Image: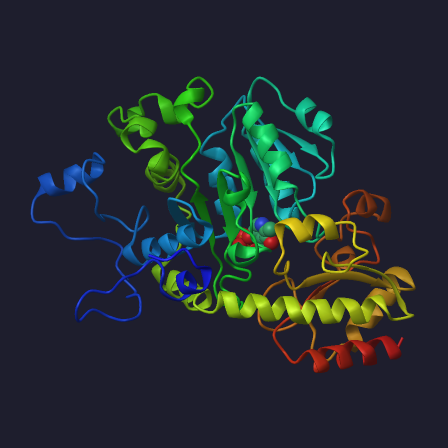
Length: 426
Ligand SMILES: *Cc1c(COP(=O)(O)O)cnc(C)c1O
């Protein structure tokens, strides 16, 4: 098919045959029927392609995963039940107890906890580096047991932009893949694989679903990383898997398929954080308009950011579309058509002013969410980051006065009027 994003959003992943449903069918079945045990045995041995149990694979989920893989320019994808599961699987598929991972320190708080607390308990150590570190600083973070590098194209909520080429080069010098969480940019605005990343992850809960309807995640493999060239580093892919009759994923499925086939066969089998077919269907409805919605989110956010930047009661604004933003130059390179709909800013008067301002908003609702059609906002210091004191908040790049505004698809005049009246009320 085509490589044009707009067409893949609408028609990718599913080609109905003659007389078949135009829309992706929801295969609402946990299990699949076979004529003989031999037929089913071949599936269990990974000798034949097919479905046997929806914890591992389901046709609805596979069609939507194939669409996202095509959007990212990757070879294979898998859906997961959440973005958290996607990032866990992407890292745990190649790193285990005794291994080490280099990660940007400017990442989603949930991912930071997953890495620094929960995966640490599993014996995996993380070194966090600033996304703005020098090449020397980045290279110094690697150890002989490093298995991957991780970052976010646009970090939630710090809105830093990752220098993907810099991180990919360092990863490849050290013989490991770069994993990029592309949730905020979406493939409409940036395709990390084209800049050297090897694996892309998503919380599809955000712009891809786009309507705050279904939680979900996705892992996409670019299919280029040569596991066999670094055989000793990645035994899970390059030596026999005894839990699957000795299959060697990198040999059997090649570069194109090794990573996702292993993640499905082992991690989905054992952890089971699978997307439901119903949620995959809802996700696909979102994907069909992703390209149209992203453009509008970006236009609205740009207008809102410019309005806020010019307002006397606003202390500061962060949006990479503003020429004065520290990430403007990186955004021009990696996000030439726009970044995302999230703007962070502070009103003068700090924490109390932030809380008062949000109470006055009429269209913008207070919600622990971003990236859906309706404008919403959050004061991290009094909600998601409530446990931290002001000094800790500053260090985490989430200052106490920060308001995270997720600009939706409403009329931008109405949004600006709403912000203006809330600021006037202070
Ligand atoms: C929300 C988010 C996640 C976690 O996704 P869930 O679907 O909420 O589990 C991971 N990464 C980023 C960048 C996110 O914004």
